[in-house]
Length: 609
Image (cartoon, rainbow, N blue to C red; front, top):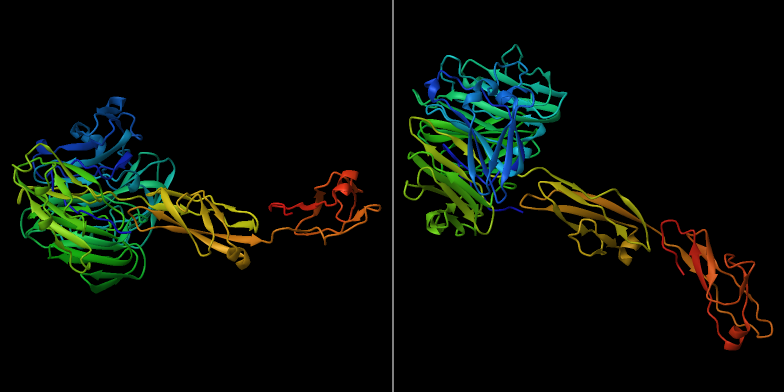
């Protein structure tokens, strides 16, 4: 089921969001050239926000016990609050450099409650943010999206492009398959491996400054969960000047999707979206036109000229958007339409420079937004249909002055009827811009309908379904006509087969996840075996002066039977099917007696009478 989304591409200095929530984050901080702007102005910080629950946050480096003097950073953040931790004093411990070397720079943030967190480079001339994805950023297979159009600026130390990896457990083997040559003598299309312990990092890099040589589509596969981030330092989208860093933390392949909407920002140079396929034979449709067929790891560039552009992929793919304001650029991994969104987002405007929101939402919910409790600041009239979506999706682009969104204040965006996604632009046209995407990436959904069952025809099937990961609820359906008890939304319900199910001999049940994401499904097959039968024989009439009854019982699908119902005696005993029964005097005088034959040795079946 598709849900509403709000896509607000952010170019900002500070942004608190109730999205991408987690209680644990891993990150390999990138190296950022100190030659781009005065070093005294180049700050690093972690920006965190709590929801309704206060949190105690711990920041450490598991592979570097000397971090912060040997004592982790511990912060207590009240509920519904934002907090900024200045990481600039730890720069030497944080930046993942030099490249092609195993390092100890992995940053680990843990919390007693779910929070949001991003890493920010605050240099005025070369800023950006890395939206940390929490548990959704951990995985074992990734492909790296990069822009391939523009060069890195020339600085000392060099500005270059890299992907940065951090391990979350010891003895993690990482296989890297680059599509272009990497620094350190790693040729294109030749895999190599590294081994990392918990908190250790590795930077795979390309220096030389040519965008076409960026390591787009590099495959990264590991035997344990890792986190991967990308960095493209001091990118120059304009003929001169306006160099700005681009970067983000990416997600594993099992979280990327098929359908995306790209909302154009405010670059005066062309804006591009870069599609990286995770599978072969991936048909790419842009604005209703089939434009490419990609193989795994290949990149296709889409020029973004309209306010909103609909991208459809026949197979899962990454979409990386390079946008910005003026001639200053930033980069962000876009969340897919089917499985992302937040119910509320809180943002902080850091400067009086341009501040704009790009919003995408499913039709029918555009009138239910509020900014700081004021619906007039996100009016329904601001939304227009996204082309080629059949009117299902709407987009709005809204800019704000410092009266409506004051500098340095928290600003809460909500939608009362559905989830949405948010991006923001807050920066100067020729100084620096940050671009982040903070919509929740829902985790991969795991659905397990349980093992196939063999059930007796006179029994019910005990189901043991489970739905975990990005969803926790599900619904059962059957290709038969039985019923679920107590109902079909209980994962461990019982299935009561109908006579038609039993006659057919089997039935297939499907468990589908229920959430904002497209449902994941799994099936369980139930085979019905015949139930036991008991035949006590034909009714008999015997003489009162010779009342001994010769019984002639029979059973099927059972090893035996037992007689009951009388006060007399069975000879040789009640467990003999052809026993004789001698009634009591009272039974004879009563004139009528009913004997019952019940099956025994029924296996998994209930006894039959």
